[in-house]
Length: 499
Image (tube, rainbow, N blue to C red; front, side):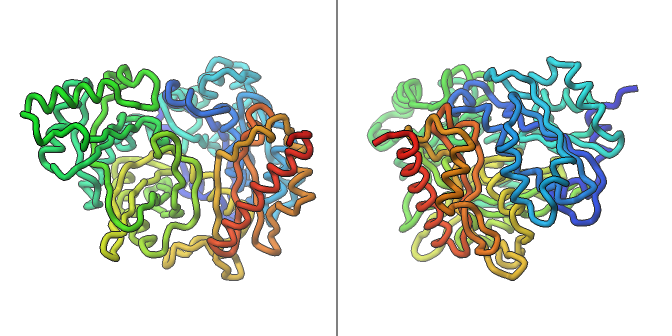
């Protein structure tokens, strides 16, 4: 008799949540890096299906000689791309790790979630299932939706991730509920609404409670990477000079033409809802830190990392990259909030990765932290930290929030998914490896500095690349980043015959 998703998850073992236990783990992990998200939002991501490569750093698990892995993608990954990751793993011969890794693909590069493609191919699923040891296998995903839930039940293998039935806690409205429950500071805001009339009403109510507000932000309940957010300038609307009715009418007019990045956002408003929050301004400095953690089977919560997010795009809220770790002034506060929220999520039944985004403002010499949202999935900061853990044998010091090498040296990095230049277009992964080797840009474990790369599949078609640049200080990591970006573009221009 087939087991349900929940019954399958009850089979998960505590040790399976550790990326590298060093305790002789004996299990199989099926990695399905599907970006199973709203298609209107994913359409905004250049080369979206190549983002399936980012989870290659989860192969850190192969450092345990008893672990086997199956990695599935839409199109077959080149051996060079896979070997570039395996060769970075210390403590295990590349050939030994490669023998315990199998690659499968759907041979389908269409702009649809990988998991959907898998479910359409029962013969492929049967071949994958044959390779997994019963009772000692689980699925690892980028995000868990109803598609991944169906995949788990089809294969009769537990999935290490949060049941999509708990997805409310990763939405904008659910995040605000968690912050209030955990006593984590967060901006004034509204409840969830599903049409323009109600959105105008809650926006007006927010301004009436905080008439000093010059700006607010409208958030689709399930937006990702800032693509479901849009700022609304309130100061030019002269709300203080209008009656309550006129105020709402004026706000509705502005909301109707809101420059929301997500296509068809009014349809999404009706489907998933939206809320409005105060736009946090003021202070001598402003930053966008985040904290990441994981909830292990059995309920243990582990805070993994803190980052400073690098944001950009037309709305200034699109994720472009990050720096690790977050500023020392508030790093431990971030970790404390992350632990509290992780424990609250664990009590609800959540599993595996979660992250909490904040805004930090320096006001009169004191940092003010305000939580913005919870993500119940892997994200843009997941794979750089995986990369750091994969190429070193270090660990996070919970007392300082620093990542220490085995010699006690603190390590830093600066990472991006979006190094883009027209002269990078047309380069093959092999060309990149040649440039990196000749320019001495690759990560050197002896010097504890250098760069590791991802999104190599985006390179030739889109001129786009991801990289994580490691150094022994924040300044050195930034220097490595600048040198790597500069050399790559310069050498690519030479190789391509550009000017």
